Amino acid sequence: MAQVQRPLADRHRQPKRVVISSLIGTTIEWYEFFIYGIAAALIFDKLFFPNHDPVVGTVLSLSTFSIAFVARPVGAAVFGHFGDRIGRKTLLVVTLTLMGGATFLIGLLPTYEKVGTLAPILLVILRFVQGFSLGGEYSGAVLMSVEHAPTTRRGFISSIVNTGSAWGLMLANLVFLGLANMSEQDFESYGWRIPFLISGVLVVFGLIIRISLDESPEFTQVKNAGQVARLPIAAVLTTHARLVVLMALSYLSIGTVFYVVTIFSISYSTEELHLDKSIVLRAILVATITATIGIPFFGWLSDKIGRKPLFLAGVVGMGALPWLWFPMIGSGSTALLFASFIMLFIPYCANYGAMPAFYSLIFPTRVRYTGLAVGYTLGTLATSQAPLLAVYLHGRSGSWVSIALLMTGASVISFLAALVMSEWKADSDTSLQREAVTT
Image 1 (tube, rainbow, N blue to C red):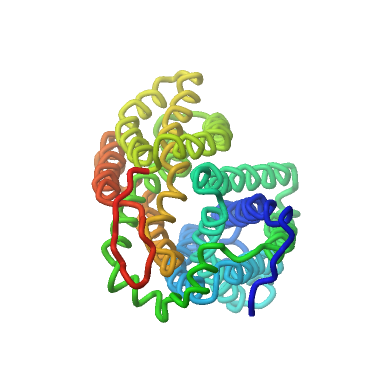
Image 2: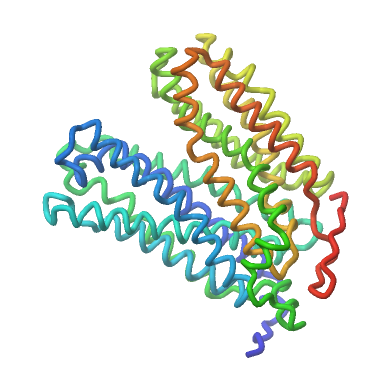
């Protein structure tokens, strides 16, 4: 069926609606990431694994957190395949519904006390559904924003979507701070459910906007030309496997830095340096607020000076600055502590601001959803264990130097991988010629 032609004024509003809907999806993605991680660490061992030793219960609880990372590449392959077959819009509605629905249902789960072993089984199933849907959510959201945006503003518009990580973190912190004064009994009874149930409001709002969107103009062009790939996942794994691997490797730096800074730094600062946890959390919050401004700025700058150069510059900064970051954290100065987090987040913002448009344009339109989803989720899977690796290295060496070497090493790999990647210029399924462009 041909797409209904909207009035001109409505078509001009489409990019703004796409950005809002994509931002909501990314915000929910990271909001879910953080509230689940906090709940798994604080309460899920008591509610879903009470018959185990407290340490074992906590390990089992946190292991459910990792299930989503395993499910993501599976979801990426499935949703990417169908996103390249039937369109971006339809799959974005499906992923948001599954993602938000699973999060909402976790808030309604019966506990072990009520239904026994069925409780942790249901928790694992819903966590898998979350990860499965997340495998296609981010990539589809970014693609819609890039493919709807004017070519001269793709970096800026898509970078707004990436601020969802910062908004999700802040929203999760605010929700749990709002529950901080609740008694332990009330929190265990019903308070822990509130953050999960709140996601339902965001999902409904996001769905209302997404249903009203037009399909991606670039996918529509491919479809009208009869160039839709029959088996996008097969095409990606055979013709573009090298690009998938390079994209995953290029993500190592930002994934490692993000998880070390936002997760490992808390235990390191409080246990090793004996700093007040609230001060460290405030420093992370200030850096996150900085990201809501910095990411769009560097996205805008990428439209001016090029996405790849800015991406590479961010990688260099993230590889070099840990050697200043650790001494500044350990200086004993609160001002230097805050400055160190902001300092390290500047190259993070440069890389993350340029990333969505740069990554989106690596693959031709006909397999773009699949290629981006698989490459990106493999990168997130590889870096998801960075905090645990950092704990292990620090335990073995007793020094922050090993962690800095980890961050620098990841940056070297990412730099070399990104250096040989180039955006797709000629997008024709009859001639898959790759041409490097300077942007």
